[in-house]
Length: 440
Image 1 (cartoon, rainbow, N blue to C red):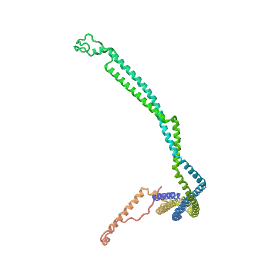
Image 2: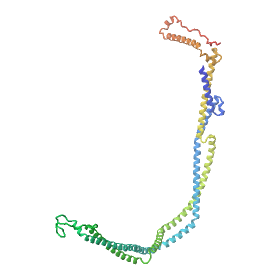
Image 3: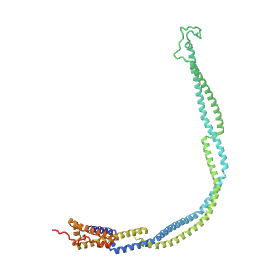
């Protein structure tokens, strides 16, 4: 009985929670109305799903219209471009004709420019050599003077060392004497008073080194003098070939001649291309005239097709808008319908369970009254009385034993013999009305 009341509370709470998820219109309706609403949502879902191809067709029409707009814009752009080009054609033709004439005149001057460049290049090369040799000749003259000075100083150092060595030759010879060896000057084997070396006495090696340095310096002086003479000869030849003009002036003249030659060569090289360009432009003029007419035809066709498709799309849009409601797409609307149907199904199930719980609670209340309790709550409280519970337990045990005896009898092979047996003295007591304990 207690569990019946608790189940009723649980079912009622679940129904209330489920109904809060419904619309205001459906929250207070009964189960039949909820079931009708659920069936209507199933029908709506089928209707909306049937419109999915129309939604795709609507999107396809939109894409086709967008594509036609793009094509129309491109055709209009082509039409304007062709018109602008044809408007500029007279001036363009005159410009290219004049350019072709100027290029022909310039190209005819190539041979004269080549001759001028060759002459100026020869003079500039000689002038540059002359200028280089002028610098080198001055350096060679200075080097010759330096080498002469170095050779004279080396000779002086060598002669000075030689003279000092000769002055101290006695000491040098005495330094080489040994006892009982004959003196290389007097031949005496005794050397009681040998000469001493001077404090700054030069050695033979120092004198030889000074003489070698003198000879090397003299050779370098001779080479420097010969080199200066060779440079002087080359300088005179280069000056004669270059003429009196400075190198800077010759370089400027050559640069001007080279620029004129390049321009003439460029004109000669570009002459065939210029002729071909003029021919191509005349061909393009004819092509542009044809393209302008084709672009005009495309614009007209795109506008007519766009109008037809837009009418079809508008008709579909009205149908789809009615089916979508507040949703953005049909899929979103289907999702909404599925969600609402799910909530309706949940509410119907909760309402049915609450109705069942209410019926069970009513049956329990009726039973409690039949056995003598005014309310279900008092019957539930009586179940907590230990004395009454013990009495009901003994009665249940006795009924269980009687049931076991009957079961054993039914299993006896000879039922007639079992019928002759005396009945057991375990008949259940007559049922007693369940009375609730008296309370003071």
